[in-house]
Length: 99
Ligand code: HEC
Image 1: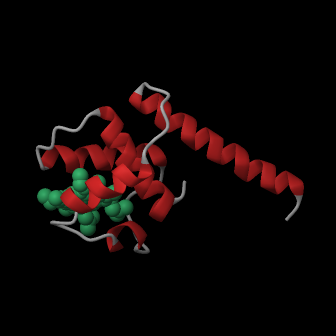
Image 2 (image 1 turned 135 degrees about the horizontal axis):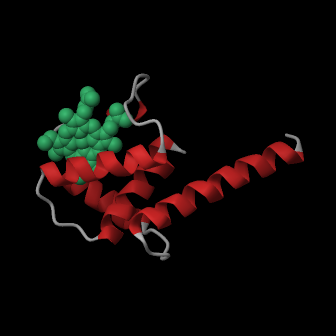
Image 3 (image 1 turned 60 degrees about the horizontal axis):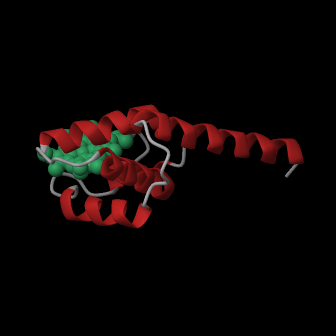
């Protein structure tokens, strides 16, 4: 792979990470394992993880992923801290969405 292409991918990853940090207004790194635990304890009642990888999935950006996670969390009346929301977003992004 040409170096410029690699650089471009790297920049995209950095931009995506920055966006997550900005969205939650903090700079601590997400705890992906915690996100995974929270997700499998709370989030598989209505849909399993195949909705994240199906061909016509709804979520097409990191920003949209954040909104969707908050929407589903709120409909469950879960009271998560921003850090916990962020952990779940990062877990989903790293394992399924890859923005
Ligand atoms: C009360 C039922 C319910 C629960 C529980 C639930 N969701 Fe959802 N979720 C939905 C529905 C309905 C959709 C839309 C599915 C569709 O479009 O077919 C959805 C879609 C999603 C999507 C988007 C999938 C796509 O198409 O890209 C994500 C991401 C998501 N949920 C995350 C979560 C997370 C994180 C949790 C746990 C906090 C959670 N969901 C718990 C009902 C739920």
